[in-house]
Amino acid sequence: MKVHFHTVKLNYKLLICFIILLLVSSCIGIYTFTNASSYEEESIKLPIIMYHSILKDTSRSGKYIVTPSTLEADLQYIANNGYTTITMTDLIAYVYENSVLPEKPIIITFDDGHYNNLGYAVPLLKKYNMKAVISIVGKYTDTFSESDEANLNYSYLRWKDIEELMNSGIIEFQNHTYNLHSESNGRMGCSKKLYESEENYRKILSNDIILLQQKFQENTGYTPNTFTYPFGSISKSSLPIIKNLGFKASLSCSTGVNNITKNPDCLYCLKRNNRPSGISTYDFFKKILK
Image 1 (cartoon, rainbow, N blue to C red):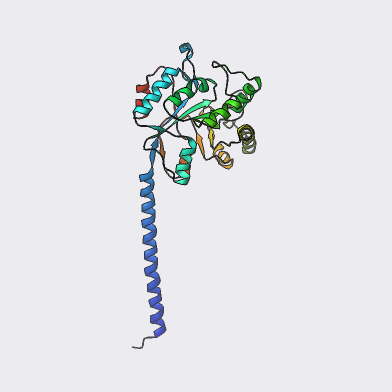
Image 2 (image 1 turned 180 degrees about the horizontal axis):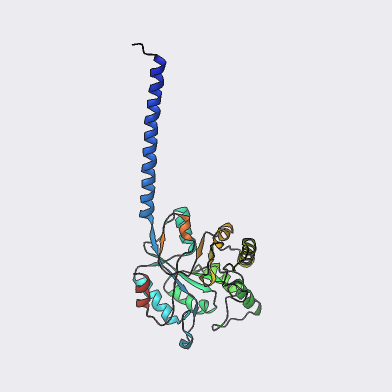
């Protein structure tokens, strides 16, 4: 039988190509499996606690107001149980830059920017060597910056207070809208109205959020990297808007503990646990950390 040399050579090349293809496929499979495994290995549990106003007057305590003594008991619990407070920037750096987080991280947040956060919360954070995140409503800050009122019972942080706290290294500030923390405009927070066009919603939400970003830049030289939803009202249309505006994360009011991986998508609509009065520190943390 006559064998053609060029045929044998061609078959040999095909065999080599087939072997290479198998090797590449195997490597891809191993890489995919390893990646998936590493995602699992690197995932961490992250509780986020949400506070609002801190007042000594117990008659005003409620769902969104706790006393300084309650806050201190909470901070003691956090310290005694091995948790270390981090900021949103720390969390974002972990996901995007592979920076290191403490073994048991936790984030303490305060919404709205009440002046009593400075009067009562900050001294306690200093005492326990902790950090926290305050998300301000720009309109409130502008109003009290203009009047220069500083009353623990009803005032909000002024721009000079914010700059002072930023320089202290204790507080990180984030965007809680400029003037959408209200129901007077016919929408709940920054939710999308029924039958509202995507274009109109995008314009209203973007303009409001950008205004506060600009205010931060003008008054502090800083740009927030996290958006905090007022009332936790989230429209699915808001996510691409938030991302397009450059925010690396967002905070919701949904309860639970977050599972953080190296996937940036896990940083959006992070769960938080509102801290009300009327429940002991032990019972509150037992409930959310179970």
